[in-house]
Each structure stands twice: as structure tokens, then as C-alpha cells.
Image 1: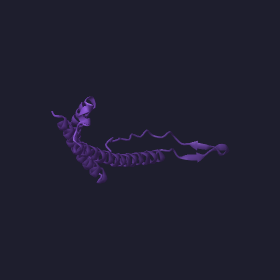
Image 2: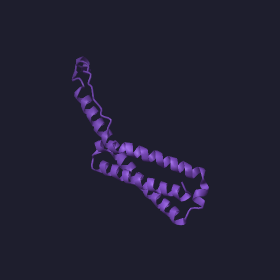
Image 3: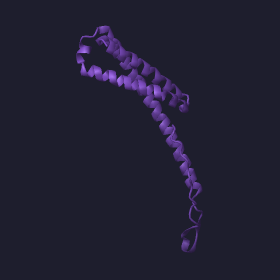
Image 4: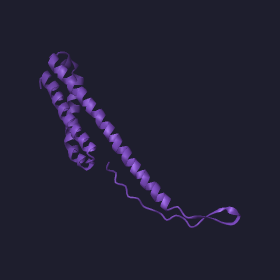
Length: 144
């Protein structure tokens, strides 16, 4: 592959990854997290190609040094866009994670509250706990 070919490949891969991240972010916004898994294989393949091309560029810095200015400009623009999309994606993932954690915490607190044994006052105004709480199972789906 030519020097400009490596840079063009990185630009193309960056654009393709950006599109996938945009799709995932849209699914997160729409709370369609179950559909994100369908993009995983394609994203993994693109990320692997991207890593290979970036390693080639790192090993051959001269490729970038002699590249046409318009290619370097396109590479920088694609990279900035990708980084901005990744930051937005990270925010949406964190929001989904916090929402899920909040739901799980609320459910576990409610289960714990309902399983508290009834307390009554006994001799000498001491609280008597009636019986031990029954064990409770909670199923957890780890999908965001």
C-alpha cells in the first residue's frame, strides 16, 4: 500500500467507526440497548483494522511527514469528529449505567424493606425482632 493509501485507509476506518458510534449513541438515546449487540461484530472488525493501520503509521512516521497536506487535514478532522462522538457516547453509556444501577438499588432496597421482620416492644421496652427474614433471590440482567 502506498503512503497516502495508509492515511486514506485510516481516514476511511475512522469515518466508519464514527458512523457506528453514532448509531450506538442513537440506540442509547432511544433506550434500545438490546439492539447494540448487533453492531458489535462489525465494530470489533473495524477497530482491529484501525489498530493495524495505526500501528503501521506509528512504525513509519515518515508516511505522515511526507503526506499531502489535504490528507493530513482530513485525518485530523476525522479524528476530531471521532473523539467528539466517543465523548458523547461515553456520556450516554454512563447515563445508562447510572440509571440501571439506580433501578437495581431501588429494587434491592424495596426487597430488603419488605423482608424486614416486624419489630415489637417487649419487656423493659426492648425491641423484639420477630423471626428472621426469609432469603430473597434477585435475578440481574447485566444488559444495560
